[in-house]
Length: 160
Image (spheres, rainbow, N blue to C red):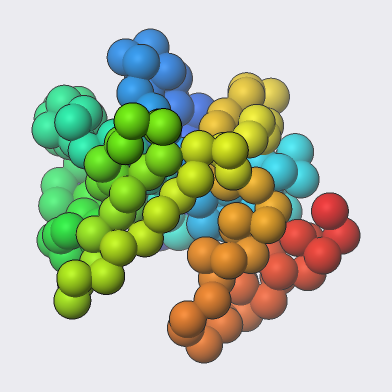
């Protein structure tokens, strides 16, 4: 099976449609999240970063597997990367607290809070998607040396 080096908008929309149809609380992050805030694709994407309700992770992973995705990196509790001819999906599970905030576990006992009020609407290929706010998208790019794609995304966030 040849793996794709690009995640297309068409594939992102199909994934989000499944999440929406199954009532999964999710948030698109990473480059696709920034492009969704802008309302158009601004660069090629290797993957889709999606944070989901951990109670729905098994169902989501089973659906992805049924479509030809296979686990290529398992860094739980932080993320699981699945790859296929359609692209790569990085699944970040988060426990939802009573207020609907996402609580994500890190490797060394860290806890990352993804506030529900920082989930906003974006658009990918004409379809509404749930994304991190521009402020939150910027926060998620802290803590590691920025790559060229991060500089691109941060410049777009500055324009918003």
